[in-house]
Image (cartoon, rainbow, N blue to C red; front, side):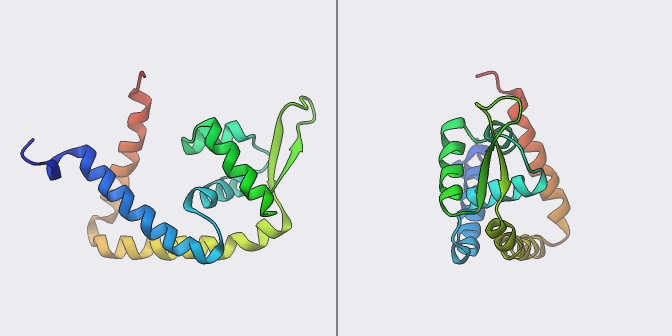
Length: 143
Protein backbone atom coordinates (compact mmCIF):
# COMPACT_ATOMS: atom_id res chain seq x y z
CA UNK A 1 0.00 0.00 0.00
CA UNK A 2 1.42 3.35 -1.00
CA UNK A 3 -0.68 5.53 1.31
CA UNK A 4 -3.74 5.17 3.49
CA UNK A 5 -5.73 6.81 0.68
CA UNK A 6 -5.03 3.81 -1.57
CA UNK A 7 -6.32 1.34 1.04
CA UNK A 8 -9.67 -0.19 0.01
CA UNK A 9 -10.89 -0.07 3.61
CA UNK A 10 -10.22 3.66 3.87
CA UNK A 11 -11.73 4.38 0.45
CA UNK A 12 -14.90 2.41 1.14
CA UNK A 13 -15.28 3.93 4.61
CA UNK A 14 -14.80 7.48 3.32
CA UNK A 15 -17.35 6.95 0.54
CA UNK A 16 -19.84 5.38 2.96
CA UNK A 17 -19.47 8.27 5.42
CA UNK A 18 -20.03 10.82 2.66
CA UNK A 19 -23.17 9.10 1.36
CA UNK A 20 -24.46 8.55 4.92
CA UNK A 21 -24.05 12.27 5.69
CA UNK A 22 -25.81 13.28 2.48
CA UNK A 23 -28.60 10.78 3.19
CA UNK A 24 -29.04 12.07 6.75
CA UNK A 25 -29.29 15.62 5.43
CA UNK A 26 -32.00 14.58 2.95
CA UNK A 27 -34.01 12.51 5.42
CA UNK A 28 -33.82 14.73 8.52
CA UNK A 29 -36.65 16.99 7.27
CA UNK A 30 -38.82 13.86 7.10
CA UNK A 31 -38.02 12.90 10.70
CA UNK A 32 -36.16 9.66 9.94
CA UNK A 33 -32.59 8.43 9.76
CA UNK A 34 -31.15 6.57 6.76
CA UNK A 35 -31.49 3.21 8.52
CA UNK A 36 -35.10 3.97 9.45
CA UNK A 37 -35.79 4.89 5.83
CA UNK A 38 -34.15 1.65 4.67
CA UNK A 39 -36.41 -0.38 6.97
CA UNK A 40 -39.52 1.51 5.83
CA UNK A 41 -38.56 0.96 2.21
CA UNK A 42 -37.87 -2.74 2.76
CA UNK A 43 -41.23 -3.20 4.49
CA UNK A 44 -42.99 -1.35 1.67
CA UNK A 45 -41.37 -3.66 -0.89
CA UNK A 46 -42.63 -6.81 0.86
CA UNK A 47 -45.05 -6.35 3.73
CA UNK A 48 -45.51 -8.92 6.49
CA UNK A 49 -41.82 -9.73 6.78
CA UNK A 50 -40.32 -10.36 10.20
CA UNK A 51 -37.68 -8.22 11.88
CA UNK A 52 -35.21 -11.03 11.20
CA UNK A 53 -36.09 -10.98 7.48
CA UNK A 54 -35.54 -7.21 7.28
CA UNK A 55 -32.35 -7.39 9.33
CA UNK A 56 -30.90 -10.08 7.07
CA UNK A 57 -31.84 -8.21 3.89
CA UNK A 58 -30.31 -4.96 5.14
CA UNK A 59 -27.35 -6.58 6.96
CA UNK A 60 -28.48 -5.19 10.33
CA UNK A 61 -27.87 -7.15 13.53
CA UNK A 62 -30.85 -8.28 15.61
CA UNK A 63 -30.36 -5.81 18.46
CA UNK A 64 -30.20 -2.86 16.07
CA UNK A 65 -33.17 -3.89 13.93
CA UNK A 66 -35.39 -4.31 17.00
CA UNK A 67 -34.49 -0.80 18.18
CA UNK A 68 -35.14 0.69 14.74
CA UNK A 69 -38.51 -1.05 14.53
CA UNK A 70 -39.39 0.09 18.07
CA UNK A 71 -38.72 3.70 17.06
CA UNK A 72 -40.65 3.42 13.79
CA UNK A 73 -43.55 1.84 15.67
CA UNK A 74 -43.49 4.65 18.25
CA UNK A 75 -43.61 7.12 15.34
CA UNK A 76 -46.68 5.24 14.01
CA UNK A 77 -44.92 4.44 10.72
CA UNK A 78 -44.78 0.64 11.15
CA UNK A 79 -47.21 -1.78 12.78
CA UNK A 80 -46.46 -5.19 14.25
CA UNK A 81 -48.96 -8.04 14.04
CA UNK A 82 -48.56 -11.54 15.46
CA UNK A 83 -47.89 -14.27 12.91
CA UNK A 84 -50.97 -16.40 12.29
CA UNK A 85 -49.17 -19.68 12.96
CA UNK A 86 -46.52 -18.63 15.50
CA UNK A 87 -47.51 -15.87 17.91
CA UNK A 88 -43.88 -15.43 18.99
CA UNK A 89 -43.19 -13.89 15.59
CA UNK A 90 -44.34 -10.41 14.61
CA UNK A 91 -45.04 -9.45 11.00
CA UNK A 92 -44.36 -5.88 9.92
CA UNK A 93 -46.45 -3.57 7.77
CA UNK A 94 -46.62 0.13 7.08
CA UNK A 95 -49.29 2.08 8.89
CA UNK A 96 -51.48 4.56 7.01
CA UNK A 97 -49.15 7.28 8.29
CA UNK A 98 -46.11 5.31 7.09
CA UNK A 99 -47.68 4.82 3.66
CA UNK A 100 -48.44 8.53 3.43
CA UNK A 101 -44.96 9.63 4.54
CA UNK A 102 -42.87 7.24 2.45
CA UNK A 103 -43.29 8.84 -1.02
CA UNK A 104 -41.69 12.12 0.12
CA UNK A 105 -38.78 10.19 1.64
CA UNK A 106 -38.39 8.17 -1.56
CA UNK A 107 -38.38 11.37 -3.61
CA UNK A 108 -35.65 12.82 -1.39
CA UNK A 109 -33.51 9.72 -1.84
CA UNK A 110 -34.26 9.51 -5.58
CA UNK A 111 -33.03 13.10 -5.89
CA UNK A 112 -29.85 12.23 -3.98
CA UNK A 113 -29.28 9.17 -6.18
CA UNK A 114 -29.72 11.32 -9.30
CA UNK A 115 -27.31 13.97 -7.99
CA UNK A 116 -24.65 11.40 -7.14
CA UNK A 117 -25.11 9.70 -10.52
CA UNK A 118 -24.80 13.08 -12.23
CA UNK A 119 -21.63 13.90 -10.31
CA UNK A 120 -20.17 10.52 -11.28
CA UNK A 121 -21.12 11.05 -14.91
CA UNK A 122 -20.54 8.20 -17.33
CA UNK A 123 -18.91 6.10 -14.62
CA UNK A 124 -22.10 5.94 -12.49
CA UNK A 125 -23.24 2.48 -13.73
CA UNK A 126 -19.74 1.05 -13.17
CA UNK A 127 -19.54 2.56 -9.68
CA UNK A 128 -22.94 1.14 -8.75
CA UNK A 129 -21.95 -2.26 -10.11
CA UNK A 130 -18.71 -2.14 -8.13
CA UNK A 131 -20.61 -1.24 -4.95
CA UNK A 132 -22.89 -4.24 -5.44
CA UNK A 133 -19.81 -6.39 -5.91
CA UNK A 134 -18.26 -5.06 -2.71
CA UNK A 135 -21.48 -5.71 -0.80
CA UNK A 136 -21.50 -9.31 -2.02
CA UNK A 137 -18.10 -9.87 -0.38
CA UNK A 138 -20.06 -10.42 2.83
CA UNK A 139 -20.73 -13.89 1.48
CA UNK A 140 -17.01 -14.62 1.77
CA UNK A 141 -16.84 -13.78 5.47
CA UNK A 142 -16.32 -16.73 7.73
CA UNK A 143 -16.19 -14.85 11.06
